Length: 67
Image (cartoon, rainbow, N blue to C red; front, side, top):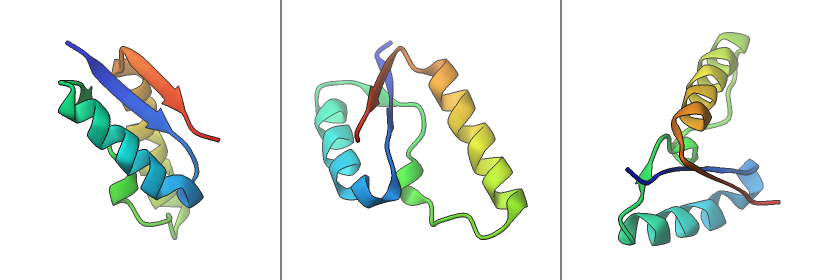
């Protein structure tokens, strides 16, 4: 299975969505779509999102970063 995760900052959200859509159109499966999140407003929210992202990275076969 071709699972992927794209890491970047919120300022690149649109680019990450575009890259993710291109990968999905080629049959790749995202492990987590952080672009659906808003910025974390509490420490608890940040911990939950961080754990979800960590799990996604561990599950991904392909990993990309966007500076």
